[in-house]
Length: 325
Ligand code: TXA
Ligand code: MG
Picture 1 (cartoon, rainbow, N blue to C red):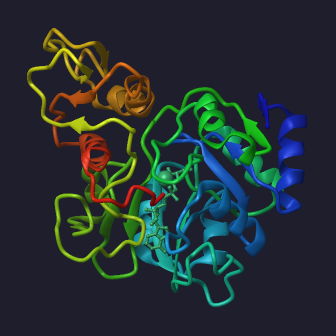
Picture 2 (picture 1 turned 60 degrees about the horizontal axis):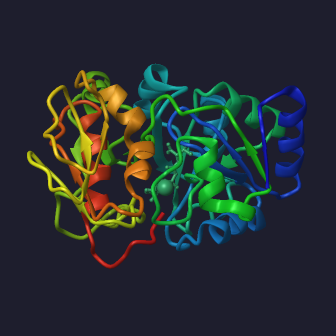
């Protein structure tokens, strides 16, 4: 496995690998992705293989913008209005597959819909452009583990399963994209993420929340949304206002309780964007020998807090299905 900075030469090398069905880990503004040619069934199979990911959990196709998206998905007015506001950026649309969509069937897990987004990270864009392909890219970690927000995390999690990692530094958003189902008249939030519910509702009005989110308890509607996900290997205790001596504390705000074995503060000033950017790397930092459990302070359930709390609840859940994505 090779870790390289993004230059014209390394991006061309990566694009060459991708055109030949190989895999490349690359930075996006949300988390690092494990990319492959979304139109090549074998490349997509290699992604599932490298992650140890169940094949019923479909992948997002990454494109440069609306023109490309329209080749692979049936576009509609909701998508048009949301793309104008959020693309490129951390918002993924689920749309019906276009009639002659060349996206691999394995990438969409045999569904008649496709998930598609245009990332804003310049390295991701340069790579998609150089490859001349839509890139299927789940987060670049072993299935069920915490998503990578730095090149080192990718190397630790995937090792020799990925031949080339483009190192673009830390991801600025830090939580995955928001996934929004646009196949009906009312958009449905399938996964809270880097684009906030409030900002989306400002464009399209009220949206529905999938009952697959950890708060809901009925049958799930999005294939990848099993409760336990993003799991550190230690137990996680939420809503902690006091802390035990054997715990690592994931703090938020100016007044963390004293007495933890180790404290990481998501945002001493209580800023949710900063907290999202720090979330996965601090969860990793606390998930280490000597620490018995990770205690997490309450995080407000507004703006990016929805995505942060969603990931934390999945990290705390233990429903015996820790290998989903
Ligand atoms: O920020 C992100 O979205 C990152 C970066 C690399 O772009 N990617 C990412 O991919 O998080 P992944 O594979 O870890 O998550 C994709 C999510 C899963 O929850 C999956 O179930 C859902 O999108 N999804 C994909 N296709 C879908 C479809 N056709 N219908 C419903 N949900 C879908
Ligand atoms: Mg993932």
